[in-house]
Length: 247
Ligand code: ZN
Image (cartoon, rainbow, N blue to C red; front, side, top):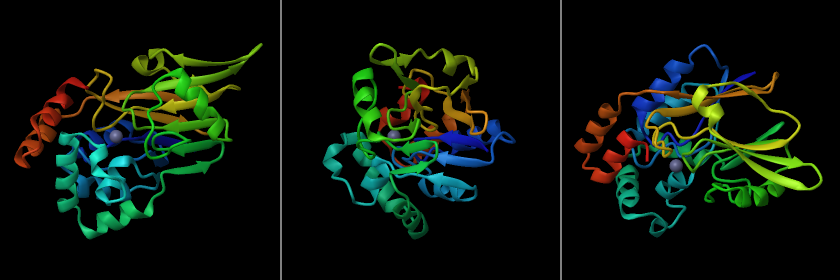
């Protein structure tokens, strides 16, 4: 099976559509790792688009906040503005969909979690120490996570002792396929709708579950289209500008 792995769309339909167009013909199912809404101007449109495709979906911290399941005080002022706007804008059908998805699931030999296998809704795996703790919280060989908006791979190796390696972004830049081998991995494909690794292009990954080959990909999208819609809805300046810089 060929899987399109995406995360953190954040209501950015232009970025989502660019990923679907770029990956067209290369996948059979979508694994979406959560945060479909929050920040961006197209929450209902993104829910509708995702539902058109065969997929496994997860719920992220922004999705949970929009549903009223998380304290908005946990978010900064700008994110809060977007969350309130999203809550007012979300239609009943979108709400029902967001309420129907979990934050963590297993599809052998993969665990999928929005933030981390330990705290599926909110934990940032950005360093080998946090990754090391999380390897004890899933049983499958591999785990895909989103939430940080930064593509990365953590690898657990057992030589004389256990070591956690954070793989260089070599794979992500070149689009070079890599083989999922004997070592357990935590893999983050990055964010579709709000990348934060100083590369404003939408990020995603392709996975072949038979060959166990994964490829990180990036694609340009019309950022100004999303920015203009955010301006129209009075979104905070910083949220609009960060899309152009990928931060
Ligand atoms: Zn997110």
